[in-house]
Amino acid sequence: MKLKVAVLGEKPQGATWLKYLIKSNLFDIVAGVPRISDKNIWWDCETYADILKANSIPIVKRRDLLEIDYDIIWSQMYGFIIESDLIRKAKIALNLHESPLPRYRGCNGYSHAILENDNTYGTTLHVLDPELDNGDIIDQELFQIEPDDTVKELYNKTMNVSNIIFKRNVGKIAKMDIKTKSLDTTGQPIRQRNSLKNLKIITESEYSDIANIYRRIRAFDFTPFEPAFLIVKDVKYYLFVNNSLGRLYHVLPKHSFSGNIYDMCIKYSSFIVSDIKREIVIMKEEIYDQYYRNFKPEYSWEKK
Image 1 (cartoon, rainbow, N blue to C red):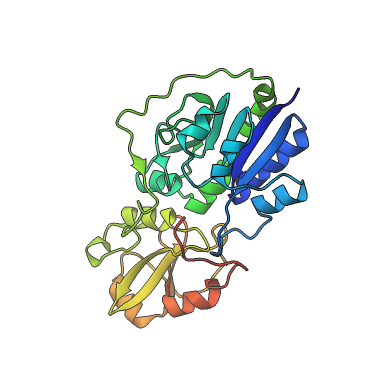
Image 2: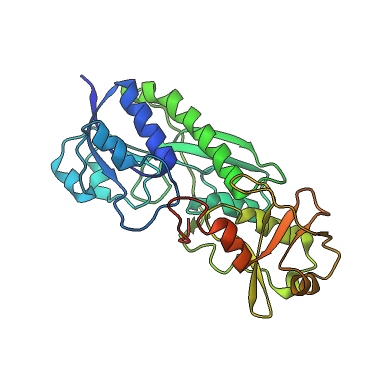
């Protein structure tokens, strides 16, 4: 007899995993809890709810799961805390957290890894515990962060590795052939959704610290979200990597970081800093908006 599964999820990864779970035909998926929101979402692909509907899987609210019989509760990039009574009701609760746990618990791990100049990242399949990102590890894969990766490029790499982990564990989970190792989260902070607040602005005192500026640019270069910026005479200028994942290739006047950024912003509405490994575009907000404000069909400035 197939194990009964209740799934909760969102985002492109969650949708990919749900489709694979359905295609495997190893489980009886008895209910699904998708993200239901009137707000625009940044991804422009098939949603988790679309897949549930297309496969006649009942869509319910999270608390409705108390009235539903299931063996496994499975979080697939679900963006909300799952109550402990729902977790305890299952034989096992599962989550695939896109970070190398115990590091980067909570939100915005990709950006924090770049900001902290980490050279490795990873993704972790673990037992879902009432404490956030705390349950025993089932599987984990680590990989290199390249010195010039933007956060969107790191996100994309992580998604690909997560897909591999998910697929290689589905059969074991269907047989309940699950081996775990303990996860020690002592001293590891939980990053909140607003953990990147106020880090995007580059102040005048930082203009000479090229390494720090470059990390900040990479850590916030994720279309369609707002990138790093500086403000000159009350005018906002955005900074991003030219032709990075999700970006256009811009042909603009080229200058070096050794010049005076303040004076260059006064002189040019947009320009390129070309004396580091990847070209950096510095672009006045009103110009940036012409290129990127409607870069995707469903655009949102809300934080990741």
